[in-house]
Image 1 (cartoon, rainbow, N blue to C red):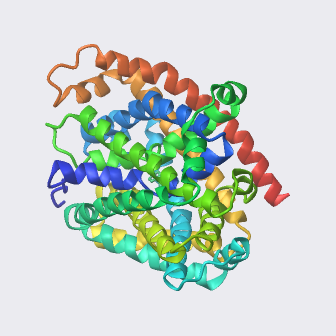
Image 2 (cartoon, rainbow, N blue to C red; image 1 turned 90 degrees about the vertical axis):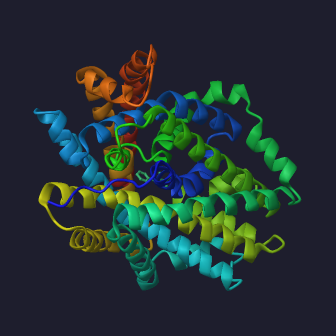
Length: 449
Ligand code: PHE
C-alpha cells in the first residue's frame, strides 16, 4: 500500500480543522438558536459548554486519531478488541448520512448567492424559500456542491484539502469581518447588540432545562465532534505537536467566528424590520438564514450585494466542512479496503449524492428532518458519548500517553482532562441523548403518522 499521507505544515492541520468546524453550524444554526433560546443567555451557556465539554472531547478525537494513524473504523479496531470497536462504524455512518443533506442545504446557500448576484431577494422570503428547496433545481445545486467536494477530496490531503483550506479559511475570516463592520453601521445595530450581548441571568435560571441541551448540542455540532472528523484529521499528524495548544486555537477560532456571525446577523435582522419573535416564528433551522436574512437583505441599503457576499461566504464555509466529512468515509475505504483515493472519492461521492436526492427533491423538508434527527441528534451524540466513556473510563492510558507527546510537562492537566470526560461530559451527553431521542421519536412519528 502507498505510504499514508500527512499534512505538510502545522498551519495546514489547524486550518483544515477550523475549516471543518466553521460551516453551516456557525452561520445557519447558531443565530437561530440564539434567537430561540433567549439571546445573550444562550450565548453565555454555549460559551461555557464549549470550554467544559467541547474542549475535552476534541482532545479525545485528536489523541485517538494521532495514536492510531487511522480512519475511525481502523482506529477503533486498533485500540479495542471488544464491541467498543463498533463506535468507528457509528462515525462513518453518521458522516455518510450527514453529508447527504448537508450538501443539499449547501446547494440552497449557493442558490441564494446567485439570487443576490441577480438582485433577486424576494420580499416574501417564505415563498422564495419554498421555491428553492424542492424539485430539479435543488437536485442540481446539490450535484454541483457534491462535485466540488469530490474534486477537493480527490486531490488528497496536501494538494486537495490542505491547499484549499489555506485559501478558504482566511477568505471566510476576512469576508465575515468586513460584513460585521458594515453591519455595525446599520440603523438598528445598537438595539441588536443590546439583545445579543447583555445576558439576563434570570432568563438562564428560568429556562436552563431547554437552554442547556440546546447549547450543548450546538457546541458539539459546530466543533465537528462525534463524527470522527477530528480523529481522521489528527491521523495525518506528526507526533511532535502539542495537541492541547492546537485545540485551543481551533476551538478559539471557531467560537470567534460563530460570535462574529451574530454580529452580522442580528444588526441585519433588526434593521430589516424583523423582530426576534418574527425570526422564531419563521421556524426551525432550515428557514432561518434563508427566509429571515434574505427578507432583511431585500429591505436594507446594498442588500443584494451584501447578501451575495454573505451567502458566498457561507458556501465556502460549507465546502470546507463538507470535505472533512467526506474524508472520514473516504479514508475508511483507503485504509481498510485498499481502494485508491480517486475511485474511493468518486464512489462515495456518488453514493452520498444519491442518498441525498430525496432530501433535495422533496420540498416539504420532511426528509431533511428525518435525516437530521437521526444522524445529527442521535448518531453524532452517541458516537461522542461512547468514545468519551472509552477513553475516560476504560483506556485512559492511551489518551494520557498521546496527550503527553509534544507537551513538556503535562502536570495535573492530564488528570483534569480525564475527570472532565468522566463526569461532566458523560452526564451531559447522556441527558442530551435522552432528550434528543424523545424529540426524534416525536418528530419522525409526526411525519410518518
Ligand atoms: N462543524 C460543521 C459546521 O458547523 C458541521 C460538521 C459537523 C462538520 C460534524 C463535520 C462534522 O457546519
